[in-house]
Length: 379
Ligand code: MG
Image (spheres, rainbow, N blue to C red):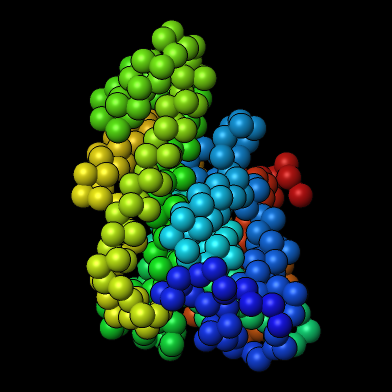
């Protein structure tokens, strides 16, 4: 048997000690348990849809903006670097990163907020929970079970947040939200790799779109400091290259800070294993200074990019599409593809099916479906 865990720290998630899968399966042999999880995620239908789902900009607004697919790959890449530096399980981080956005609705956060409002009398809608629902129930790939039958550790990493009401319904996996304990270090790390990825790529996409300007970005200390370092090293470097160099330095600074801070915390806490990690406070963290700077950056992006009037216009349009679709399907479930129609008059079940249907849509599919339902010129 190959020892996949031989380079890991004692507090890492060890493949050989996984808490296992819901349905027992033979060991994967030439792969670790978490490599198998990653492979199943990459082969899933929901993963391929990420290519046509977006976060800030819509899929058709430009070919160079991030999509959820390229974002997930960036999170996996940053996450693996961090994991290897801290002797944590790279395979688990990669699997978690590639799956973390599988439950996202079309049109980024607005899609999820509107769907949550639509579902308020039917149990609500949470995108983290939906990611779990995709890998536990909705994927149809295997003869023996629904979903992908992933390990406990990958599922734990996917479920970043969860309301207490829903946590109570989740058994094992929800327990940590009730007990207020931590997930594996790999889950904590993937969460922060996500943050490093989106903060940096939103600056890039924001500037590329023209909604943000370099001059405006000077307000952000974290950006300005690295921009000046680039100017000192390459005086007069033109626009795009200067921006890439600045972002490169920012990602390096954030990852270095995270590794250094977390390594010191791990040295002091010296957890003997993953159970100690779960009982301890969060051990993967930025330094206080970096945390303050990234918070300021996020605040800036919120005010100047996510709430830019052009983004607002798309947001309002997108929310109308999601709400219209939900209302139309609830009023007339016969409009739904047969797989999504519930035979009984169970409205709770029907609403959940509609949420699954809408959440699974890509941006362009939702726009097309809206036309098909509401426009007389479309079939
Ligand atoms: Mg993300």
